[in-house]
Amino acid sequence: KPKPKPKPKPKPKPKPKPAPEPETQNKALVQTKAVQKRVEVDPKRNLEAIQKYIPKRVEFERAKAEILPVSFAELDNLALFLSKNPQRKLKIEGHTDNIGDSKKNLELSQQRAIEVAKYLKGKGVKNSQIISAIGYGDTKPIAKKDGRKYHPENRRVEFIIE
Image 1 (cartoon, one colour):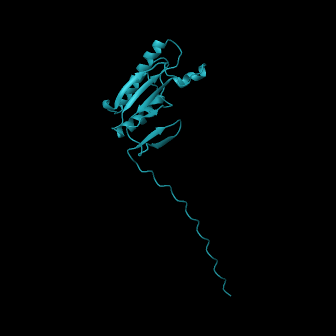
Image 2 (tube, rainbow, N blue to C red):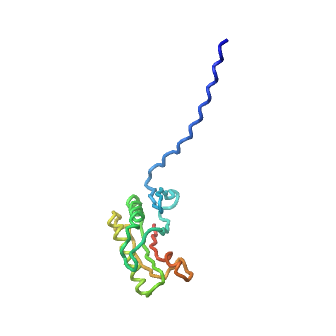
Image 3 (cartoon, helix red, strand yellow):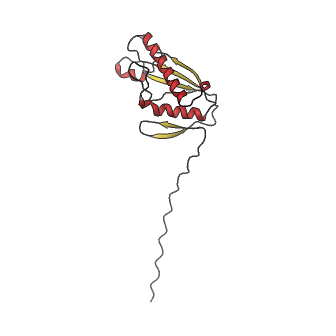
């Protein structure tokens, strides 16, 4: 008596592959500590809307306006975004902590904002896209509590993208 042929096992359904992200002008490469990801600017949002951007990795030499190399990836990504979106305009705001003389902090924050503008222009951002580079010193802290642990949050550069 012939043996019946065993029924073939059904093949498992392959997992669907995620659709590749379409490359658009509205995407910018964002560098976080150890991860790069693409962030899309909401196309439904009015291009004239203002967006505040506070990068986590734009750092300077202590008490100087010299941009540290750890900052280059973040600034390069911003330059790429602005180059691909020439209709966007940028305001650069420099800030310091409240350690030391307020007048010197104001001058330092202004120098840092100018250095960031120079760096971005060197990476291909048009002069017409950079509206201003202003230093505010220690006048606009985001961490208002006393104590050294809050100072790093106040030492920052902010970007206003219009």
